Image (cartoon, rainbow, N blue to C red; front, side, top):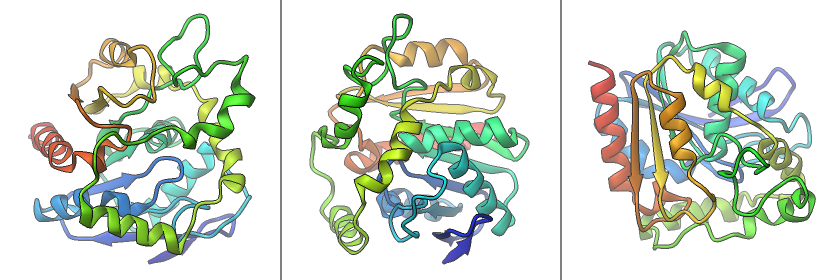
Length: 264
């Protein structure tokens, strides 16, 4: 399915199932097919599941127009209006978590039941007062290192064969353009969502990949300290940054347990 944003960009999405709504949001360069295992599982659990390809991602239109995290949050809001969704659950991996926090910043939390963020620090750039961002990334080397973020290893164990084939087929049909996307990556990396996390008033689950290799320090401690409204924290070992693809059964179990507890 497709819809046209208010600034004229066609985005591709899926909307399947009935019941309470879960919106699955990918990270930078990610595609909606990455969520296949979660989509299947959640539909079987009785949820309505929506996935989205961001602008210049997946099957959505390639454009240099408005490649900003806040614009992607606006795109998400327009999808919510298009699909007439209320009282939703948002699950975001990597930059998808950043866009959830951006959505909360712009549109508030009144339509949110709960949120789940997967392997994302609230502040990617390290500085003198924050050492839990991307490995080795700071303001002094930002422009040198940021173009090579996607070259870092994103997995440390094998992705299930069926899922890997689905994702590879879609990526082959709609290859990601790093040159076009770089503006978005820069904007994403420059964000600082620490105050937003402190203001979250709905249940939130943080899923951490212990062996991700993408992050330095321990941003988990900050998340545990700053958000105490129905907070849950889960860690997964022996998986990389794409933990939802590498360990789908574990991630699905964490999601299911959290959702059913938070919806009581």
